[in-house]
Length: 213
Length: 213
DNA sequence: ATAGTTTTCAAACGTATGTTTCAAACAGTT
DNA sequence: AACTGTTTGAAACATACGTTTGAAAACTAT
Image (cartoon, rainbow over all chains, first blue to last red; front, side, top):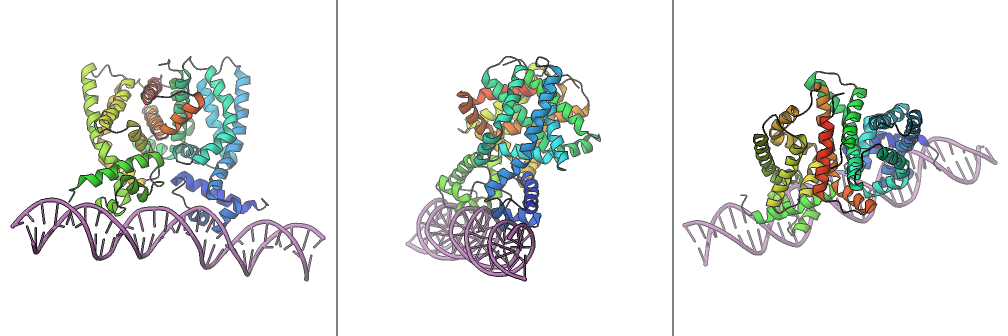
């Protein structure tokens, strides 16, 4: 079992793109299989169910991503020392890790980010549980490090600020293409991805570092 | 035509709550009509289609909301003067307007907010077009005012910061329930909605007011 | 080549959806 | 009370969905 990766990957490629474009409930297995050029039954044969396919879509990029992120973050912390951690730079590391993994697999960062946003926004409780169970450990050290660099505040305010950051990231990344197009047409300015990342890092770190309410 | 408001309102009440809870595609007309205690055919009789019902759900609170928001914002600007505008306060005005309209109609702010978030997050292009066509004019003055209160920066950075704010708002609103649930289970703290709003206002205004890159 | 396993394929299954139908019930007017 | 237009109701409609089936095809090894 788990032999032929060709059909499996074709399905995952198609599913990833369609889910990111349209959401989970709005994407049918028939759309996925016809885009992938495989038989309808292949999804249930290889994955078991639509739910399992959704989870597999996330695992495929979240597993390498979390490894890359952990390594890049450790490298940065060792480089500057635990007392000189800059929030904006940590955010940049996060974005950069996503980009590295995307490029390595010849895929789009925007799609990954949009999927992450959907994982929050859509009513797929199985997905949230799955992600929490498999990946929450990777991000706990990140949270802990981040907290040490932030001003003293109540746990609840800290909780919300973290999710504001995640929200800003997910939303921005997920619509980065259309936003870049808007910038180009409204301002006739060519907006570089890495410039946007530094604006973003500046924005969220200012929000995080704001004096507690 | 457009006579009996009783059935119409019962449908809108049920639809609003279910849409906010589960999303649009995940909510069937049968769920709505059975919750509303009316016949299934009533939706198509009174609204014409499910799409039209979704749009009507938004219109019902967005029309009074945008009026209230415009008035409260003008009142605030006249009160402090155009040169003393505080971003965090403008965000608070936005939230307060939503709350006023909600209370006036004996309904939940959180539900409205979540609906707005879903309007961004869910793949309902007809909805986005509908909202843009009917309500974009109301928010243009808001943007203009906001810009005057921000530090000098390049148009492109301003462009990105505005969309970071929108992103944070939309994302937070669309996942406000699940985040509140997370806060409750992870921190065993009951997170009040209005506290969250003030954290949010603080966060985005700090991001907006950060020194230009 | 042959036997055994894995993968594909077309077709069907059962269920749920949005929508339509048309007769019955209701409301208001004369 | 009878006629009018409006609203409800139970049932059916057509379509789309996720999933299952069983036989053909494609592989893998002996």
